Image (cartoon, rainbow, N blue to C red; front, side, top):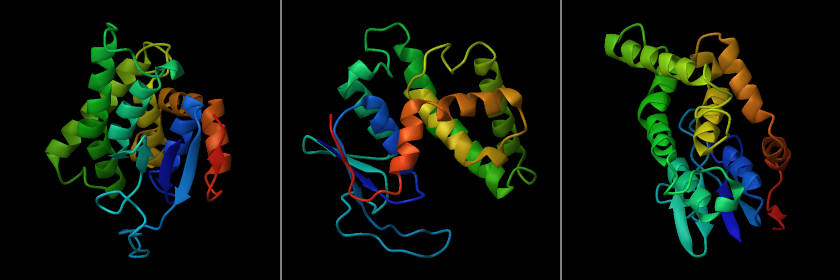
Length: 203
């Protein structure tokens, strides 16, 4: 059994989608978190995340915190889902590069765009423009970042883009990519489960 420590309308919501993609048994355990944007809420002592945040996942006694760590671990632990190239797959390097790019480049660009920080910072603007150019180039070549196969990299990138769509320019290719990912059956099931506390799913 996998346990997901989850707070509504937070980064842990997309982890329900990931778990639905895996088609394995899991439990959603609701916890409270401090929300800095509003100053509301407080860290829950029942939450094992070292910073009192979400998502956090426990599997076979192992604690994973932070979205990228959870994605890398679970997709390797459950290779039957087909969402990550195997270590000996020639595509593995591209996959890991996209995962790292998501953290190092896309997220900073996303939050700079959402906060309106680009006009006053030429460096942030250059980084933002580079992110947009790389996304356009990748999606011009296929349905997903690595061609026609959906991977954990698409999961991370598309969920972030859906969350902060206003941070990116109008673009039919971006919209189609987000819709393609968000329309996956696992994503649809996850949205229905998001508000249900204490959910346990069978394998």
